[in-house]
Image (cartoon, rainbow, N blue to C red; front, side, top):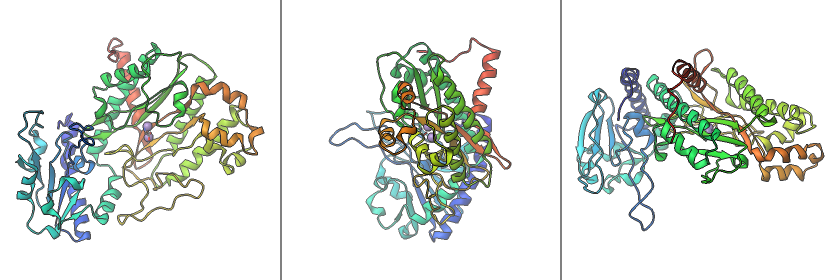
Length: 458
Ligand code: GLY
Ligand code: MN
Ligand code: MN
């Protein structure tokens, strides 16, 4: 709803032009004349009059920074001024979404409706020329003749969604700055003995966010909980704490950040291992540049993690065996990264063109999410990890390689759960910019200037 600073205000008009160009071409290629991009609707749980928090559809958010306007839409007729239809119910139970305001609205023909059915009054007459994008339940049944979420339109939009406009990069930067402030508060809370639940509260307060405004379920994993990749618990009581893996982030104008840090309560061999993985992560980040197939980077990450497993004396196997026998996968069982933007796992990561041609997954890594060749304007995460996951370790223990594994050391390290270091990078014409490290460095400089301005605590 608010464009946060002047840079965003000045980049938004160009963003809108780019979006209009993309939609013009997508509609023309698919043979349609207009498209309604829905904001989605709120829903209740089964047999209940309450439901999960509403989340705006990302295609809608790309057009307009409106995150709390269910039942609304952008109607775009090819080559014409976009129409913003805002649903403002007359409801004395809930606060009505405010009427949007600000200079950015000048680009739209703004219309307000008081009932969902009134959408019909604004739709073009020829529904066979109309595309409906988003949650199909939003659209009145009278629109049945329209084309809902056609694949060729989605393929086109998702292919280009991977190339961020300047406005989008600013939003992700702003989300990252907010995330870094929240991460600092969370680390401080961890160091004073807070529980997972209390760390979450500190994160939210410092990030000026509610939990439902976060781009994904925050992972706040102490000790062995870090071995569960998407750990969703919120332990209420403080226990003896060895480590914290925190994978949590904030949003800005509906754009996501996605940051992970790993900490130990006191210096130990595991602290040194975190430092080693951080070095590996930084050298992978340094290799990010246009023209690089992401699958190659993922393979290189496996080779570097093989070296770490050897250096840490967890295995006595050569690199080729560690890779060929998929031993590295036991310790690093997820992808090196993914596109980031309107969604935390953003669209377009595995198609090679506007027609949605799928990029074949590498034989060695059939589950890799991001397989595209990088280009300037991509925003992606780099997030190598090493974990001690019982279910994966048990397979290795039963294999013929078991006697080459240092089980004693692994048992000793299990109480730390695992390590992940995750940054967000913008691919530039000549390499990349690490948005996360930049935000941490800027925060360091600001804190050095005014040490009392530390993050808020609960
Ligand atoms: N936070 C989820 C992920 O890192 O992909
Ligand atoms: Mn991620
Ligand atoms: Mn993450």
